Length: 293
Ligand SMILES: O=C(O)CCC(=O)C(=O)O
Image (cartoon, rainbow, N blue to C red; front, side, top):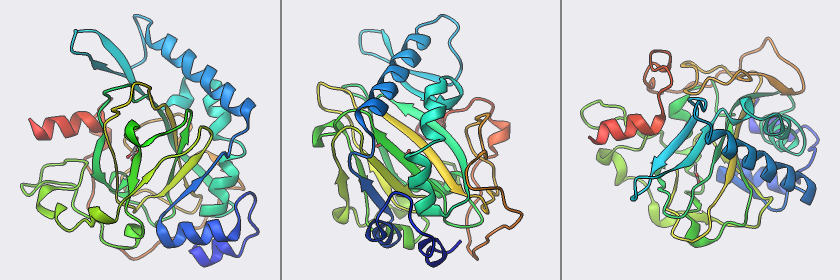
C-alpha cells in the first residue's frame, strides 16, 4: 500500500497528523502509549527473561556482554516473543497492532521482536538503515521501540535523521565489499548527522521508525539501564527478498487484518545482505565485530 492508500483507511489509534508526520519524517514518537498495567506486565516479563538467562542452559538467543571484571550480563534477547508469552501477547495485540496498522495499512504481518537492556556502559549502534537487513518489495516495514523505563539524553537514546527514509539507501558493506551491517566509512560523509534528533521520553512511549530511516544509538552513560522492547512489522503485501536475520517462530504471522495474495512491489535497487540461512545463530553485531577485526 502507498502512504496515500494507508492514510485513506480510518486510523485506529493515531491521529491523521501523526500518520502524516510519520510518512514525511520517517519516525514517530507516540508518548505514553501504554497504560500502567501494560507497562508492569512488560517489566515482569523482562525480569523473567533475565532470570532465564541465568540458567546454565540458556537459549542461544540470549546474548551476553563481558564486563571489565570478567563477569557477564545480559545484553539482549533476540526473538524475545518466542521466550515469554507476555512479550508475544504485547507485540501481537493493541496498542502495538493498532499503531502498526495505522502506519502500514490494515493487514499487518509480524517480523521479529527483541529486548535490549542497555545497562550502564552498554554500547550503542552506529548509523544504519534497517531495510538493508531485509531488502523488501516495498518500504512498509517498520520497527517499534517501546520505552520500558524513562529514556533520558545520557542513556544512549536512539537518534534519527528526519526525512532520510526518502533518500539514499547507503552501502552497509565496506569499500572492500565486506558486510558491516552499518553505513560504510566510504559513504558516511554523506549522512547529515547535524540534522539528527534524539528520541527521549517517558516510560510507556513507543518510537516507530521506517525501515529506510538513517538512525543510530549511543552508549548508555547513565547509572540506570535503558530497557526496550523491539518489534518489527510490515504490511501483509510485503515480501523480503532475503528473509530476515532472526528466526522467530512468529515470523510473518498476521497480527492484524488478514493475509493477502497481493504483493506490493516498488521499483528500487537494493543490495542483498549476507545469506542469513548460512549463518546459523549469527548475531548482526558479531558480523560487525568480525568486519572490524
Ligand atoms: O537501541 C536503539 O536505540 C536502536 C536500535 C536499532 O538501531 C535498531 O533496532 O535498528
